Image (cartoon, rainbow, N blue to C red; front, side):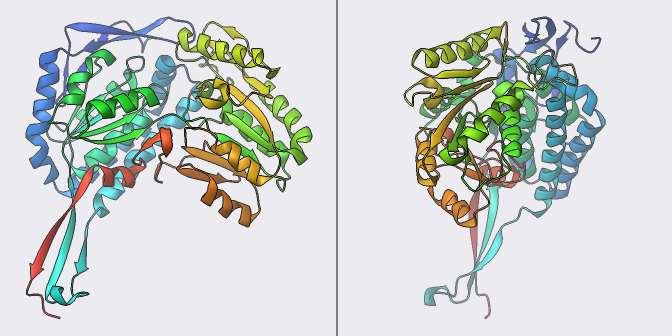
Length: 481
């Protein structure tokens, strides 16, 4: 492909493209071919990026809302105009099927558009203080002020839209942002840098630094970056918090999301299709991909064969093929890990109903039943195309099984019973409950995040804007009644 050559792609230092002292190679996960190489910034370049962000922070937060909004809208328009090119880039570096890459681009278009809209209406408010005798004649003005420059650490699985969910809210509130993309997938973030550079954002408002993970410590500890927005593994996330205990840290971590089939749900074909698709989209490399399928005993015998059939019908192969629905994992080490966990569960007594085999970086879509609750396939995040099925005796048992995890991002509950829906919202220990669908549903404008080991804080454009800012109060005295 002409678009992908070994020529180094520049990093972005304070809004300007620069070459680095070293280069990082990017490989296509499906066949291992080199897609491109990118410039790795030196320590001096990283220092200049951070210094520029700190220097422009006061000026940028005072930039009029309409200027920030127009810049974000310009990014949204340009992403839409270059959608085909960007989707190809995502598939080339990440290996996700082209159909899913196209959806990711469309979501990023929306994310920047939502941010443009929120930038115009993200205001504080007035609070009357005469609700207490001591406050007569006083009124409070409450404003949202950026906490400071944001360090945005993004994962490989959504190399554009999860970067967008950090960059767009930061720019919307007037906070400079420094992006550290995943080393395996830096191209989409660097392409976004090109688009950001075409706007009228002030110098220093953004930098894109594809430093290696081991070189990120200096950024994490730098006091000039008081906010860290991290998406990635639970292990790395908690270690990051320990390394920066006095910073404001927003984390979206792992999960092993459950989909619950309640006894009142009658359209089992639809549920099976949705779970099959969203247990295997992105090759299962999504924090809210379905992993655990909890089926009421009354419908299990009918539902499980439908699920196996739906999973078996998914097409795997070259992710550039528009018909392919399940592509490779990000690398062979992760594919081997998934294969090993399946074998461990089978050795512990689980039944492999479908799949379980690996070829290079590709793992067959897999379904297992009778998985012991102490195996990794139940307790940990597989981050691969694997579904484990368990049977529950009633809704209460199903909810208990769903909560039997250290994670809590989202859960899906297939029910049409309003009472069960409200009970699920009250009982399930997750950040979001999706009624009538899989846990994989995410609207980019709604609050998104988890509880327990799945993180802290919330993404979603407005929610992130609130996380990146702090309230400041001005009290006016002598206000007439």
